[in-house]
Amino acid sequence: MYRGRPDSQKDPRGYGANLRQCTRWEKDPRAKVVWRTLRYPQNWPQEKEEEKGIDVALAIDFVTMAVRGEYDVGGIMSTDTDLKPALEAVAEMGGNPYPRAEVAAWSTPEQHSRRLSIPGRRLWCHWLAENDYRAVADPTDYTLR
Image 1: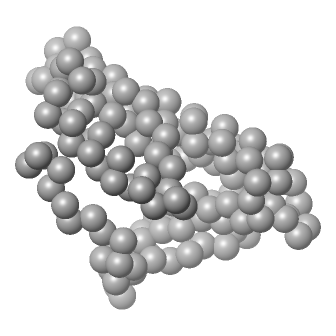
Image 2: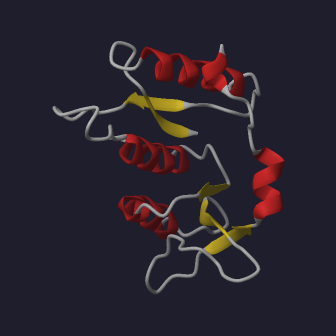
Image 3: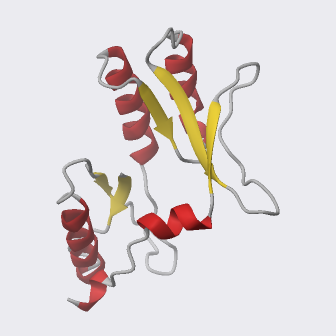
C-alpha cells in the first residue's frame, strides 16, 4: 500500500489515525505500507494537503522489483497516468513468461471505471466489483483511539 501520512506536528490526530491504521495493516505478513509525509501548502488548512512522491515511489518499486525477479506478475490499481512509464518498462521486459505487468480497476454492472493502459499493448485488467471492495474494506475508525 502506497499512501501519504499526515505531519505529526500539523495534524497530530490524523497522524495518529494513519499510524494506527498502517500498523494494523502491517500485522498481515503479506502487507507492506510505503508512506511519505503529506505536503502542506502555505495557506493550509484553507488549501488541502497533497500526497507527493507516492506515485514515484510506487513506480520505482514496481520496476526495481521486476528487474530483481521479485514477482511474476505485478499489478497496479490506480488511474494515475504518471505510473504509465513504469507499466511500459515492465511490459517491455517481455513477460516471457515473467515478470508481467497487469492493472486493476473498479467495475459496476453499469460500467467499468477508468484504468491505466498502454497504447498498442494489451494489459490484463482485473475488474473489481463492489463485493471485492467489501471483502477487503477496513471499517475501523482509527481516529477514535
